[in-house]
Image (cartoon, rainbow, N blue to C red; front, top):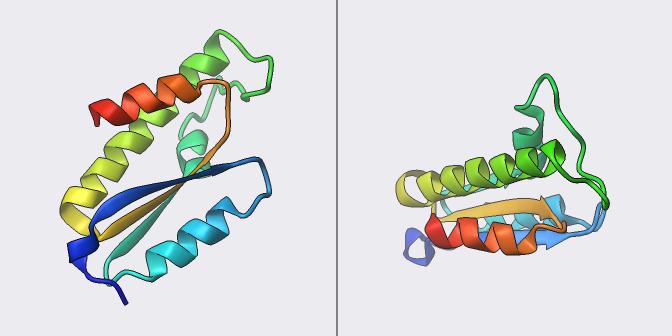
Length: 107
């Protein structure tokens, strides 16, 4: 068991069905206070007008993806500061890698 001294955010990325959630869950369980934020949870928060992210997506799908990244970063930051030793996130690899990196730098 790892203690709160090792507080941090771990971002697990990969293609669909590559084991991201499994790895993040196992990692979070190694800490005395661990949180696993699942990317799918934030995607389901958009309940109407949701656009799925596909390799050639643009417009609203990209706007929604950016929104999900911002919500995920804010939740991870909150968990890291207040609740947990580790926050394991699962996010798919996508064409907005640079955008995601910018969001995390601001969080």
